[in-house]
Image (cartoon, one colour):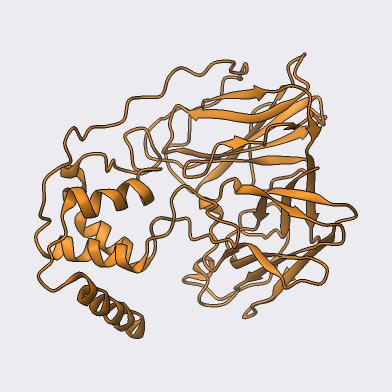
Length: 385
């Protein structure tokens, strides 16, 4: 830990020299752009962040916490990278960003609010929303949990190019997983398992809206749409309701939902195994998005693309996996892949004293399964013709 903080000081000192010793960061020109780029996807009045950064007074009030979170790398909680461009709306802070934030705070938070700074207008009413069931209120306290149910696929919807959604309590309903199902499910609490090989994708703040390219569409692969919500008790009796609307499209080339699974594995105490998933394309395709599925014992997740006769490229990578901060990892542009391309996913698990799940206790044998204290190793993808 000491070396880590010494390292921070070293790069900070070097970057300060680039800025000039007498340069004084300004809120409007230096700090506000960082917040808009990396914080505002979540930190608005209607966002999942616990407080809004839309106004300078709120930023100043929480400046000590901002400094700690920025230097530790804990925020923004989307430390995901790709050789094919950004895959989240809240990109990680750069070294220069961290230096500017630290200097601004140390120098007394100089500068004035940007002209006309205000909270963004609330979103307009959602059109074309589906008929949703009445859901029970969130638990007042306790660990995060799942809530799942199905709704019938409306008649006449044969091609879908995207999804819009909104939570009545966005700080408590943070993620929504969509998949197809042939069986109806009444609202019930559930584990964290995706539980389907027909996973459409994840809807979550901080990630791009779910949209397929023009000329392609999802075609229903079941009579029901299965909805799984990740609930975070907040101490208040908040609503679990969401609004959900499919974006209809003209008939287009059908997108393919592909899921890879590593069943029946175990993680021994004091071990750090790496499990691998592989799939070779039997035809040319375009990779639209990936969604790894792992839980709290997972740490590193990497998805590589190996085209015939070429070096591998990284489609998705993180050294700090968290199942609480995942989303729909869609690439800025679908990745064209020739026949014979191998898609390889590697997920590393830590079942030692470094794992937060083992805090205060000795590591025990961990099995694969649907429970919060069990693990999963899956990769879900959307492939386009």
